[in-house]
Image (cartoon, rainbow, N blue to C red):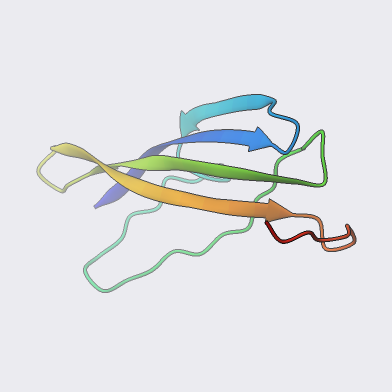
Length: 86
């Protein structure tokens, strides 16, 4: 199956929201066979030292059917910022 597109909703600690949509990831639309993985590194500018993001990937099967895979929310934290637990 092929990773066709991505969508991210990014919110920084000040509440500013940025949405990203586009083909593939990091300029690629990887094709994955059963059991294979694809790993990449990416980044996003934030107006605060922390934030949160979530989104989804649009996948396409070999037969041409598409479906979405939800990516649960995860935190974005500057490694040099003071951390506060809530």
